Length: 266
Image (cartoon, rainbow, N blue to C red; front, top):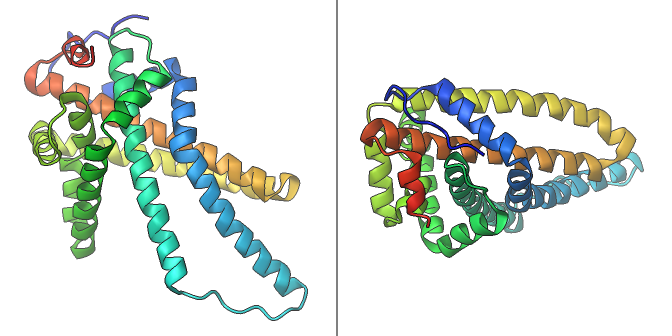
């Protein structure tokens, strides 16, 4: 494996980030799918299967002529939703942290391993959770007030997790550092995020329509499993893109190449 060369014009380019993202994904497909399946696919499958089974039971009761009570919006449903959101947020943060480690190693020409990537993420689980909570709350509240401030904060803190994992700063210091790194390139980063999310949304939509054909043939469990694996792959792509963006920003803003970044992990 060859080290990625960063001897090129110091400007953040969306195309370059895309290229490196899919190169890393292609070289580490098994690792990315494995991490994505554990930290995104499995919890998504369990949640969707739980919801799907309840919907199927209600439909079956309606078809049999039995009286079906409308779904109740009670405390149990609210707590279930909140619990799933918290679990998803924590697991997504661990996944991103693990893929930051794997991405840096790959770009430096080293073989990324499952155990190494996961151990780096797990050892930092407490600050990662703290950072994720603050970012989600900040972006969430800003979006409730007005969408634009929420998007602004999302872009501003977009590389906070890579900063935390790579530079081992505190939670607030990582958010501040992310703000400094993204300054001057936020429109490009926003463009990257928009392209990634739109492309993945279209892919999800197409595969979602295909899954409608799979359900009658193979059943709900298989269709739910396919959707969960898709979620795993998409989460991996987004996490790698964020990690590559961090490497690019370090190079553009400070001239720090990937070899210097990898030394911190030694």
